[in-house]
Image (tube, rainbow, N blue to C red; front, side):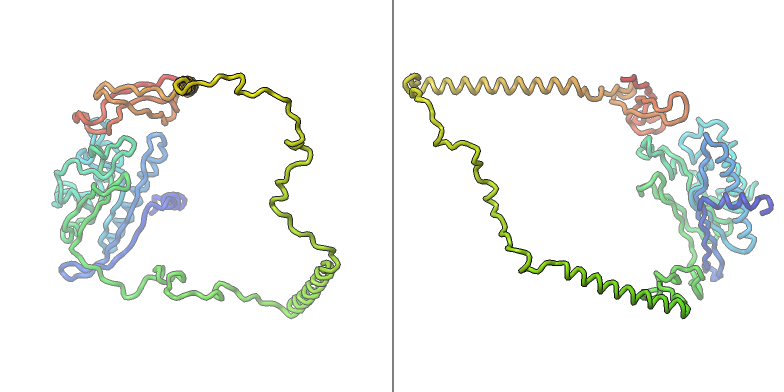
Length: 402
């Protein structure tokens, strides 16, 4: 650990990216061995943040030093999880279009960590083996991670970033298979696994930090007294507390007496007022003149001025009135509809991509630069191999400002 400072060690371990557990196993030969599992989530190298690439490489270096030290101490070691690097071109959907694919520092680190995927000693013998490539050396399109934004999982256009790496002896002698589970949804990554021909040996006693030793998981109900700490009080403090409590009791009695004497007795409170009836609030006002007091002028009867209509004329009049009313209602609705259409024009129709003549989707530029926040149109289909006609085409169009 001499190549790391204490500050660097704390920084590398501060993001909680490694979980290490040790287990006792029994091999098919009957030998008991120690197995150390290092579950990791290695850092991602953001192209816009060069310092994260340095952090990632230092994390790789520290992980390798720890794993090799455990091997020297006599333990089998498995490193599993998201290593955030596609090792070989076969592990990447678009390795041919990436500049200097083999020169990536993360891939060079994996070259030094891993041995021959064929499980045979070759020109380079690394301490660990990629278990999946040991059992499936030529399996193509075996990916574990896909872009959610581009929908690349639909056409299996991704990368293999998740691994189960075991030390050479353990993989050759005890691994039965290694597999991927791309059909299991729920994340941009899929689960991976391996099957070992070993059995677990239970420990003679639980480790000190085992969960069963925590009070909340001890299996017995806790009493409230467990959460109370006795407070040591001197004689002077106890006497002052007793005096204070006596004064408080006397003050409470006096306040109770005041409250009781201040209330008027029922005989002294005067006659009780009966509750008003709800109808009393709806009596007619006296300011309004009554209908009987109003004197109406003597008007001639309506029948003397209007000549009666025949039933045919009344029916015709009724039909004309209904048609006029319907016409007015229709004109009013059309006027309202045209008004709201002029105010709320709605989104403009999406342009069609040239590859499939289908409506595009709008995206927003999130990369820092002069185009940050601008909208553009692109093909709505999921991303896939360029040779697949059902995958996304290369259509691109800037959105015009409204």
